[in-house]
Image 1: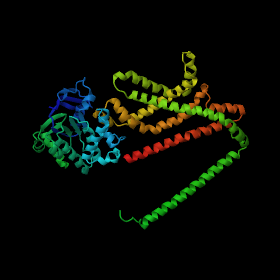
Image 2: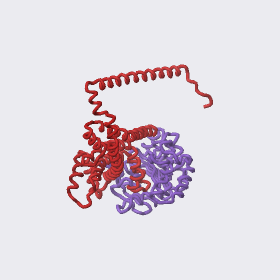
Image 3: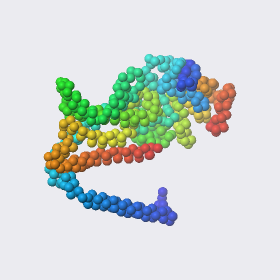
Image 4: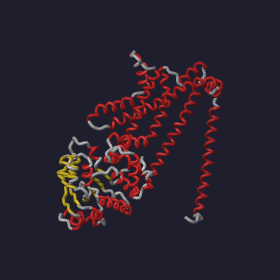
Length: 246
Length: 281
């Protein structure tokens, strides 16, 4: 078990965002979180990365309780990569610097080695010629691929992807999804929140439907997306189909 | 593109029309400037008291005699300006960061920083100057620095409070998602501030910071109230000696000349920031 969330609760004021949520993720497993806006997908990812403090429950990474107040959040985050919906690249740094900042400052690795690795990654995703460009010169799809590389160079145990294609033009979605498919082939453990049901079907080992901060239904993509048990899941999926996104 | 685009007659007509309009506006502007300027010159030089004013404010001979003293005073302004600007920036940066610290451990530091910015943005500079240069030496402590140093410290403390608020506004303008991204990479709060937040914050408020530097340039002269002779004080002394106001004009012209490069840099930086913003959108 690489990641284990047990009875996690999170409230914002009087709104319960995560309600006794439990979720286990094995090593090399890809889990897709689906559900309506406000169902708690993004909040769960932020809680796993300790960007948001939980109100109750336990989250374990490699059997270590990372929600223990004695745990050092900076140490925990070094083992988890996160990619955001709006890329969040650092606008004042070149693409290469965006990628090398954490390996340099956090992991204290040698400059030559970091640079080599960063360039290898950029070549792999076809952005080697953009190494010295600034983020505002890149398309959304290119920025998001850089953001993924930025998370990957730290060799995380777990990669969290928070609706990474939601801000992209439809024709740019493909390049990001192709990249994530490649990561799955590498054996990267991933938890991704997504609205792209087709993609969830292709890439996920397990699809988890969240509703009202709880796991309502979970299972193989063919079952959850193709033949859901819960009426609420059916309702959600039929709305998605109506919107033309499946 | 293989062949060059040839504008249509319609568009050539538009270009010609715009050109005519431009020529017309330039001519009109030139004419109105000449009329206003001419009226001013005639109004001032034709005034009944002009000859007396000219003699007591624009006496070239006295200007030449006063020039060395005024420029010597100006040298003090320049040195004070450079040292105080750097020190006030450093202080402002520290205080701004202290005000953004969260957590109960930092409460005393945060309270101190907040109290400082509230107090010194409210206090008139002259009062602080008197307290520092007249009150503090009165304590007769060992190793008391000179009045000049105390005056410089006054400027640093007062301007540090303004700059701290400008920088803090910059820090708060950096979107929280930038912090989240930096922290998610494992950067500590300190590293996040140093590498992600402050560089963006300072870049955004550079025009405002430079504007404060221009204001400080004029205020450094106030230390002369405590004794040291700056350009304005030197001009005052010369004015009394020659019973003529020309030395003030000399000092004024020198101040404007001194400010020009800084103002130029401010405009350039502002323009560049605006361009970058519109390009980034």
